Image (cartoon, rainbow, N blue to C red):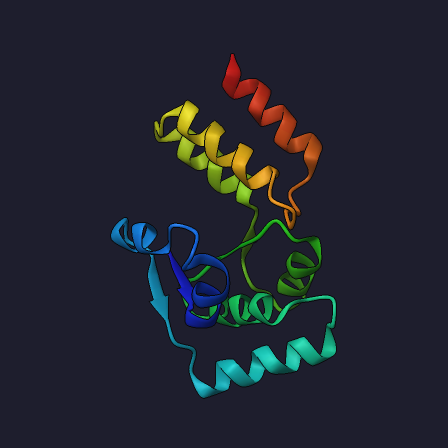
Length: 133
């Protein structure tokens, strides 16, 4: 998994950033063309944050997929033929490969309780309930 450097610095570094890097998270610098694309998208779609636009631009790279729970970002990615999946899709894949369900539950619970969480609450409740049983 990779994230653009600006997204890492603004949103991840202070929330277990070093630990995530130890687990393999890579922080990448966007090319000037990718930065320009991010700025163009940000100007055209003011509902998207600059970090959202950097993530979208990074996902235009070959072999990259955008992971987001934000509907506006998903819509923009789809319109640009960028492959996009949701956070819940990612958590489902982790459950399928045997990641400990209490760990997944704790993580999703923490994400769902974050004030900027954009993941659908009904979907969150369904997974939390399923992982409890």
